[in-house]
Length: 78
Image 1 (cartoon, rainbow, N blue to C red):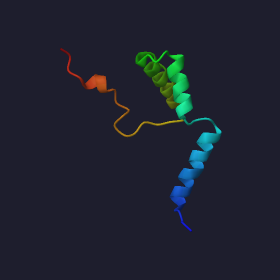
Image 2: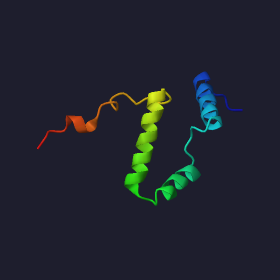
Image 3: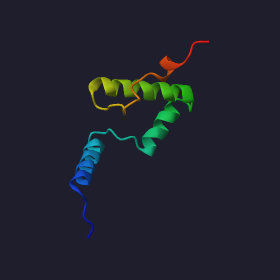
Image 4: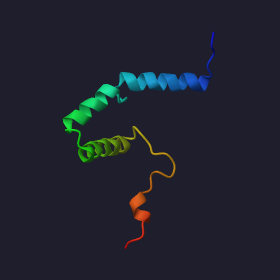
């Protein structure tokens, strides 16, 4: 029988919680979003980014270190 660490068990419980609360994007969910946007990459990206911003505002997700900086802000103006 395989044994798992406490950390692995906590991660598994978090995954189950996310699944129960509908916070996982399934392949069917992704297909639904794409078909609703007529497979337009710009519209799909807009929807995904808007939802990410809403989730971040609610504190449901956080960015990885270094990703909370706007990459466009560091570009030199031409």
